[in-house]
Image (cartoon, rainbow, N blue to C red; front, top):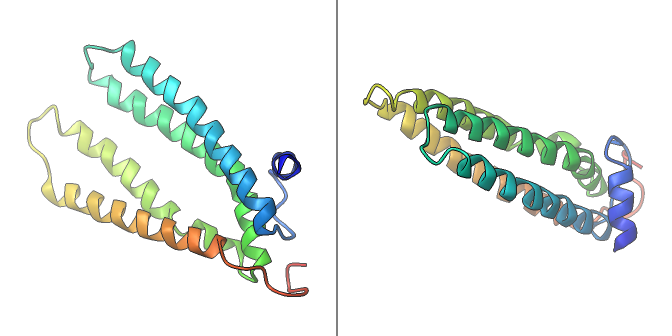
Length: 158
């Protein structure tokens, strides 16, 4: 298991080839664990320094959270592509959830700016909710694809 984690961190920029389930899941767990270990204290510090919750606090929180999430996506991107290759799928399937999380994050910032005026655009709010639902659905679908068995024998990815 430790070799899978070390191998995963050593292959962060290698999008070619294949990873078996036993190579992918320990690394994915370590990357997500590292993300949680780093993001929870940062979030606590960010909010503890802004107890009065100034208008800038949500923006700082979203930007910091976005940077941390981008770091996690960067760590996992190549491993996800290699895992999908192992089951005979293109690595582009790993991009399914990204449009929804990007839309939600940018529109949440727009919705946050409406707090000051006192009026919400409910269409925007519901579009964000639908985007969140689609993000979760595509993430679950991606996890199911990542959990598939390896394709037997060589395929177009190795």
